[in-house]
Image 1 (spheres, rainbow, N blue to C red):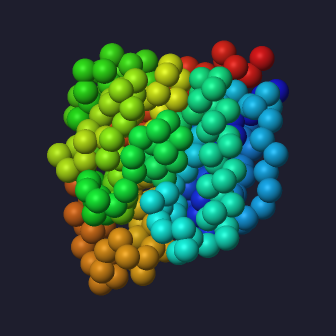
Image 2: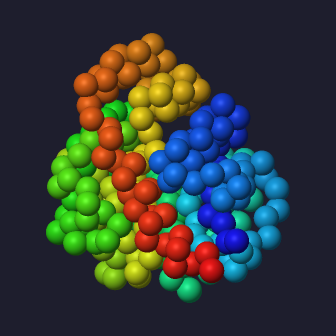
Length: 248
């Protein structure tokens, strides 16, 4: 049985475990159907695309646009492995979904520009808007034209190659979800996060420079009346679209 490969980049065990549990919850997959690989640990990973029906990558505190001399050895190793995986994914148009950090990785892999120059977003539940391409795409067509999702990122996509399709955007960030070729996607927002998950992230990353530590509870309160139930649909759709076709 082929599996889903989940690539993770969170050195903090609590955040990593919570993210893993969230992806299981929203994809509807069992543990035995997912191969979890923590690239944050700086270990070698021998990627064999034939073992999987799809790849999902999570977020984390890394930024693709960080200065090289400020990247840890683990981050450099994780990016090196990720780029090799994404190069093969791009070559074969293999099913991939990258969340948050995945935008930076995929933008770099497809020849776009990612930086901290513009379009960063504070930790919040923001309104996401589907583009016409997003409304027509099989991965996102059953999402509302407008829905709330959790964001919080220091870097963002500044430009994409002409062949990329922007499927969703927000008021402050023009690339919230995009597609390359037929089966390769990345979202700047976090489709896996509900209130339970964002509480864990706020507690774990309160000193990571995303927000003043004393603002954590205010951030959580600001999200409590937002409906976050639509954002995870894209993960369910990814499984529905690709699992039966690829697991063979």
